[in-house]
Each structure stands twice: as structure tokens, then as C-alpha cells.
Image 1 (cartoon, rainbow, N blue to C red):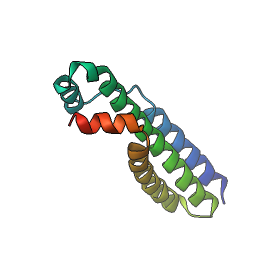
Image 2: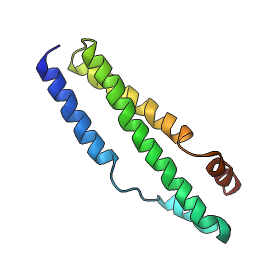
Image 3: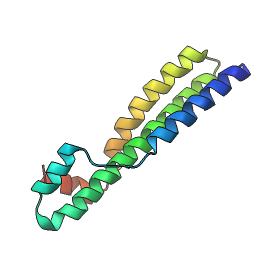
Image 4: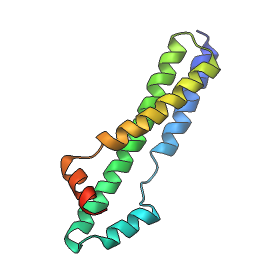
Length: 113
């Protein structure tokens, strides 16, 4: 594997991770869901939304780094590595979204649809 492949991959992962770890805020739909919730559930619901978003972001970065890095190490060219990183990011995002919340949050989110 060429050093340029590794350098390009590290640059892409660094830039992607920086944007992915930015401050987490709620969307308009999530804020509306919190407003409709019972007053006793509002703080916990906000916490669950933020917890889920952070897990999504973390899964995206880990998936992109894992699959993209593996493709680069396995000898793929830059295009194959980037394609692998994109697929890994998508898979990691979905896995993080579902696995990133506790049973309490799942129940709370279902109760406050």
C-alpha cells in the first residue's frame, strides 16, 4: 500500500470525525415531541434524544474508520477505500441509532410518539 493512500485516508477520517463530534442539538420535530410529552418525561426524553444522536455520530465515525481503514490496509485503491468508508459510515450510523439507547430510553420514546 502506498503512503499516499494512508495519508488520504487519515485526512478524510480526521475531517469527518471533527464534523461528526460537533455539538448535539435537537431537530424541530424532536423539540415538538418533547413539548407534547408529559411534563415529568420532558427532561428524560431530551436526554434520550441526545444520547441517541451521540451514539449515531459515534457509530458513523467508527464505521467509516473501520471499513475504510480495512479497505486501505487490504490494498484497495483510494476509490475503493472511500466507497468502503461510506458504506461503513452508513451501517455504523444505523447500528448506533438502534444500539445507542438504553431500555429505559426505548420505552420512553415509544410512550411519547
